[in-house]
Image: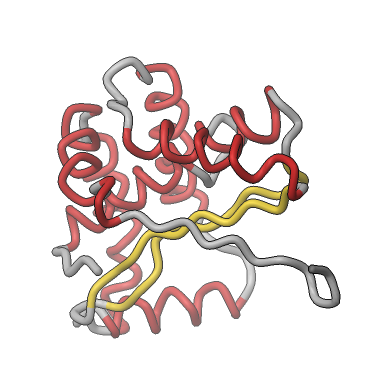
Length: 169
């Protein structure tokens, strides 16, 4: 579990997008796009400040592919991002768009307000959040994301759990 201040939270959000949350993400590209090993690859950064955060990857794949998928996840999560400049730039652009476009539904806004309050911000601060986040995101460097990745995603703390479908052995 991770307990992080706002800038580091945005760096972790960046990390999640590089690994999972975009069409160009490493895990989407490697597991689903390039190899066709899975229908779905998802997960991300979960938790609440100040309790902490955890990172999770979920892959729906065939039993015969579990070991190969596990190896790809390990490689993508634990290898350096220093040669991922193109993905970094695309993710940075996507996150800046996320900040400038905003959200459309009341449920999304309610979720953002609750998330902000949980991280000790006032509900009124939400209107200032997007410009602030865009400014921070545009200043984040690949080196910073790599430092946080190497500090937070330690191979010795990473677990893989295989869950079989109900009724199957």
